[in-house]
Length: 188
Length: 188
DNA sequence: ACGTTGATGACAGTCACTGACATCGCCGCC
DNA sequence: GGCGGCGATGTCAGTGACTGTCATCAACGT
Image 1 (spheres, rainbow over the protein chains, first blue to last red):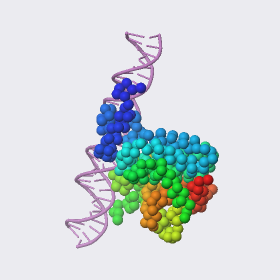
Image 2 (image 1 turned 30 degrees about the vertical axis):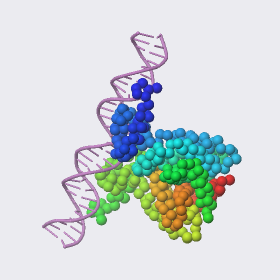
Image 3 (image 1 turned 90 degrees about the vertical axis):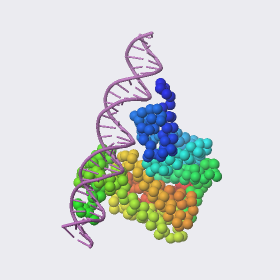
Image 4 (image 1 turned 30 degrees about the horizontal axis):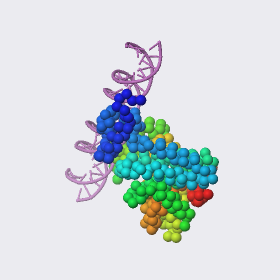
């Protein structure tokens, strides 16, 4: 464990988010983040691969949650329904963190580099889901299609949940979005 | 027009692609690209916003093509079918450039930064398609969902077309993928 | 001829990120 | 209870992407 001030990573994360909100991502230097956390620039890069990654550190947890939920779906569930159930259950996890999610999303939306990073994280979620489906015996391209469309629904439902001040239940939005997806892809 | 050697941008693009293939994206410096093109580093950045953009310069054309194709679909066409027709027509455009597309894709696949850039370009295609659908009177979230799933199909069909040595007809793969999408989202 | 204009060159500067090496504080071991 | 190992941090020098600024130069119209 740590012998200096504990939780260096957490302090860096906190300092980074504060500064990104206060003066924007581009206007913040890594040296400033490290200074606010009482550390050096070099140490920042020992904890995070780059200046963006500090905002996306939790995405591994999200991926695990999704993968586990899909793996736990009953064998009888169709691929798209296994995915839909997993995404719904994520909605419940986000429920309590709505304000911090909104803040984070505001920072990301304001900067193209951060949006790029968000997209590749979502793509890695999709890849993990497709993998899980294949392990359940779903062939390609059905596995990839179900995973990609599931993540697309997640993106759209998340945006809606963040921007709609009246609807606090993300799982509900996810359900409606999957229904809408079925209607849309039915073709008429 | 130019008073020096003509087509500076084209020379830079050519030099960049050659070097990315020869020694890889990361191992290539912008100074080297500029030198091969007979120009300076500063001039490179006057033509391309950054080192990655040189590989994605044509994406504006692709976006225009897709948007026009969706806008030209008959009013009677369902949103997903308008999108499907547009993506299919793109397949025909790619038909002749299969080898260069494969080469380009190999470079992109080998580097995470380039994959990020590709994803944000695809996202901008999706946003443009959703916009076009809205102009046709399609409400959200149906417009966004149709656009996102359409781009997802495009991604998957493109990968398959690039990697399958036996199937030269991308439009055909796109058609099959949309059929598969409909089966997948039907839910059973 | 001359001034204008647009593309390029030259140059200095910032900042993200990396490699190498030194340091420091705790932990276990004898 | 000193000692060596070890992991986390600091220091420093360096590379390379990208930017701002000003000079230069070749065509073009007048």
